[in-house]
Length: 291
View 1 (cartoon, helix red, strand yellow):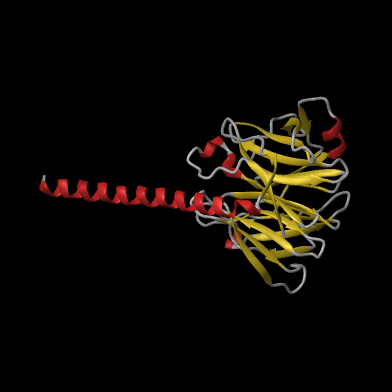
View 2 (view 1 turned 90 degrees about the horizontal axis):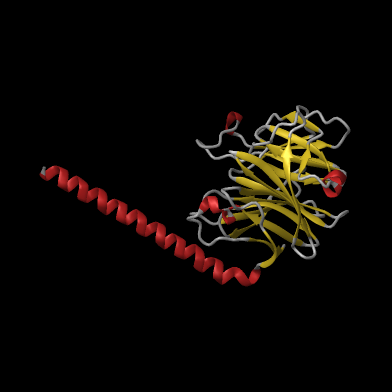
């Protein structure tokens, strides 16, 4: 009995220490965000963060001057949001439907466009959509025109200079990839891309969530996992050549999809979702920072 009391007391003390550390870490993260907030400009609401939906991918269409954003919920159909770039207001939201008329309930992650097609990656698969149809449809859904299996996880993607880039999120043991080597695969755009034959194969760091490329061919990645640690914004020189890390910048937790426009980087945060009721601070707006 005496031993049991000592054990319970030790457990209570350990739980108290852990809770205290978590509270102190939340305070630290919030103070850090408040101090740095003057460097962030809020540009639009993040959509798809209610009913335990989790915002993920982000891209921009110059042709239509809109932001495209994805969100998923494993128990419900995944969503696509079209946002007016100038006003930040929602134009429409569309359910993502598979080519066989089934609801897409996958973990929709990356989204990219070349102003004709839109690509959305999810769970070792990539779905293609017609951008003009997305913009003009009066339906509350959009159906993919093609679904293709991927050789890698396909957690994020971006388009640049006639190349579609698709990459892996990796964090052992929760998110594994073959040979413990997360890859960034680059495909030259053609009518029928062979996803088993990438033009570029590049090894990635772990925990990459989003990607963008600058006009100077610098590669930018967001890296994050959980709300307990800050995100990283990592910039490399042209990764299609012999490259090096240029810099790393700390961001608030759970930075996800990004896109680059006019020397500024636009960033989505997953912790805006009510799925993460404990997240603090919650970043409920797409922000932009000067790169």
